[in-house]
Length: 126
Image (cartoon, rainbow, N blue to C red):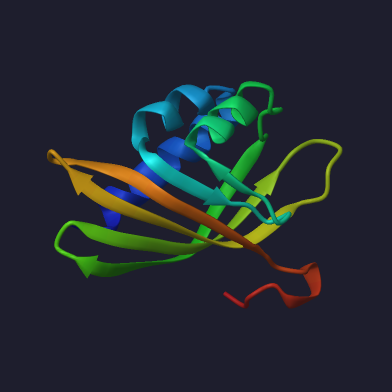
């Protein structure tokens, strides 16, 4: 496993959220028991994630910064980064993010995604 592999998946996910195809992408990549812990204090299982993405407005753009890979086992890893996302008419979304991936049948699958909001006054230095 390399950081490039998992970072490429993370970019594909964000691009799908910008294109309005997030439900399709995450239906393919999430494990059946996957969960997302979102910045506003909600925990969503796979079905709830897919349902919420069907009606979500697309993001205009995003940035991934300060990415790190944590190898948990040979077939499990966490990608940790600072994410910035932008939508017209909304405040910038800034959060620490982590995605835990497991390799199943040779493919990386998302099992856990977590967001921790960063107040604008506390933005990490580059």
